[in-house]
Amino acid sequence: MKLVADFHLHSRYSRATSSSLDVDQLARWAGYKGISLLGTGDATHPLWLHELKSKLTQGPDGLYRYQGVRFILTAEVNNNFFCAGKGRRIHNLLFLPSFETAERLNRTLARYGDLTSDGRPTLNLSARDLVRLALDTSPEIFIVPAHAWTPWFAIFGANAGFDTVEECFGDEAKEIRCLETGLSSDPEMNRRLSRLDRYTLISNSDSHSASRIGREANVLECEPSYGEVIDILKTGDPKRFLYTVEFFPEEGKYHYDGHRACKTRLSPQEASQNGNRCPVCGKRLTVGVMHRVADLADRESGKPHERIPFKRMVPLDQIIADSKGMGVNSKAVEREYLDWMGRVGTEFEILMELPEEALKKGGDPKVAEGILRVREGRVRILPGYDGEYGEVEIFRDEASAPAEKQLTLF
Image 1 (cartoon, rainbow, N blue to C red):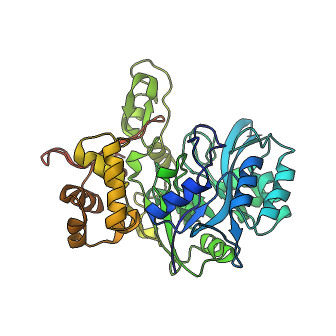
Image 2: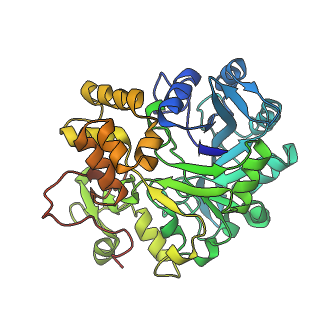
């Protein structure tokens, strides 16, 4: 059975999330998108966990169900600790086999931080100790470093991160088998580091609203169960892990270096030439993901070392908006998006699977052309930086410069 899975997202109990982000909204948008397995997110938050328990029903496979969508219990935590004389803030993603396990773990984690304060709580607990406490609670819990390259709150982040998994997790590093790439990097970038070859790479939306789930995802082929899914993430078996669905990494918030206050966006090469300082105000730049990957890489290219392929995607509502010259949140874009869902198929089917002829018959020919351009990589992206998303242009003057490639600036 093919599963489209998005494991990392949030509820309305996390900061800076939609106030309407509840189980019903998640199930509805999972149906639109064609997502068959969805992380719950925020399973450490007591109110969200209570809501999940009131809505979800556990099946014999260890997964939960609601309105035809399978759910797997997940949570993200912020580990706040000192290591080697430096303050560290590292986000980690937890997979949990049952409500009972989640409740037992939460009783332990509540000693290290206020679980009611945020759906993604801050714990005064090292990443190493998180792993040990979690596995002492249940050996079925699985831990994945979240959005591994973002400047803040990530294992390899430029501001508070580490250079290796071992530096972060110490003697528990052997329990880390999988890394989340984040929106600003892709598998090819990660595979520039030979020491990451042994880790499975996953991609998730980290969504703060229901409409943004699935903007990155994982496509698995298996009989769905909690144990089977975790085994695939541990082993990276290419027979069962078919591919990941990726943003163009330039679109991520931290791909390039920059300083948002001065609207300064710099390539890694430009930033290095300027001493990693803003050319407008002289303050230190936020060093982006592309720069950080290049600093740690021992390969020019990662592609030959990737065993699980990936496909790039621009969400359908963005393609519709660009085709019409409208904002992505406009009512006209929403109506056309829902029209495509009603007449043609799920968003993943439309973007990834339908042949050209079916696309052109299915809806607005210009939208169909936009989908084909994205599949072929014929887009232009002004890279994101310092918390600002990149800007994607699909319909542009064909004589204009092609999109910059993320691995060609060093």
